[in-house]
Amino acid sequence: MKLLATLLFVGLLSTYALGQETAPDRITTYHVHLNALKHQSQVDGIQSAVSQLANVKSCKLVWIDYELTIVVEEGSERGNFPMEQLKGIVLKNNAQLVNFTKEIKK
Image (cartoon, rainbow, N blue to C red; front, side, top):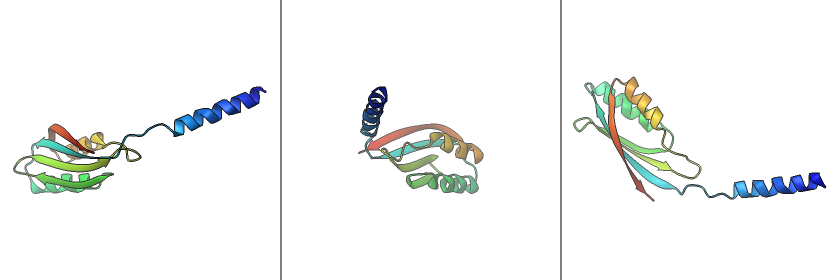
């Protein structure tokens, strides 16, 4: 009897866990302000590496404005944009991340 009750409880628990709501799909645009860009190789390296991150739809770095614009698909099964990886890419290319803003479109 205890086994039956345990199986019933586990079944209900798994049904509840699978039925939980996930984050809705969304398109997020990150405007990242950089510093210490001195060479075209830095610009190319950052833009190339960020473009290869998961779920990135587009990536553009305007050297004159020191602004990196990244458009990302997020939500549901995709998860969130890997900001730690972005920081690593920027540091690897001898640049500095000053700040960023996030714009969400559903």
